[in-house]
Length: 484
Image 1 (cartoon, one colour):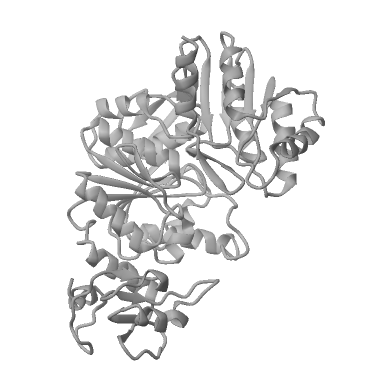
Image 2: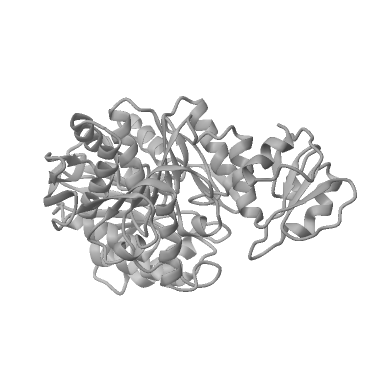
């Protein structure tokens, strides 16, 4: 691609020698002959210091926001290299969001992943192939490419959008983090819809946000980048979030304040299926059943329904999509032959475990069984707290391995038991996670809810520096096949 084509979105039309650009790099170790190297300044490193190395590797042009001295490449100065990388990447990948694919961005403290997958389920029920980009990775038809961050660097964002468009996706649903908005990872991306789920304290301190005000200001940026903003009218932060918005605003509410309102939320409890059902009124009238447990998922579902209603998805598809929605590793049901419920979840600390088990207790299981371990080479206090949470809330805890890394799994289990022993909770120890899962399946009783916590969407176990394949869906299937 010609350099002039890459620079056109930056408004640069002269002062350079046009040449063919083979790639865009922002890591000097990945610079290749003929590439454009973009110098990014971060909290830990400054790409300007590596401009010379990139030029030695064959970079044809250096994009910088400070003067750099290189002999073999032309240097182009711009006000902000992060913004430049986003605009150049969009151009390099054929501007996929300007015609090829329509992009939905979801921001908020909680619920981004679940709402994203709900939106995809609704769109696909209406016949619109949809990709997802976020915490779980870049997902097309269940084929997932891992991402470094919930919202990756702009070059990767546009590469994935191009990949989705080339795969025939009409829509992409993205989780958009506050850090990504601050760091211009989605700069220049024209969002069809922006969704705001909720706002609470998170990501404060260190290299994240200095305070809650900055955190909210960063999230608010999305609503100057989208055509329509779908927002939670019940959240106290919403009106401040919208102060500088430029989009059409559409509100959803569980308290009667919105354009679309939900109420009368109740549990849906069948063997193999836990969820919620509730009533929607306002611009639509329907009573959807949602195949994911927890009353808070009624909010997520209402957000997804509001978003997709604005995109023209019909009622029948809304009902069908919510009924069959699954989020990999988020209270994900796995089909089993018995009259019990088996779930997979990513809960890997005390806060997430407390939320998960408290939610599942609301469904009044005969027994709530929690299988979990803890990560090695991580603070021990996390293990104590997880043991205490499971001891208080589960009827039986099955303590096993997770990613033990460079620690002995038996030592980790002993730490978990310190917290467990502060409670009256019953537990058993089975260090081998596969055997622990087998034990749960073999000893399941009618009416039980069994949750395998900690792995979620992960498909490996990390032991002594090696990642071994371990997808719990595959493991469960193999165990069930062996028991036939």
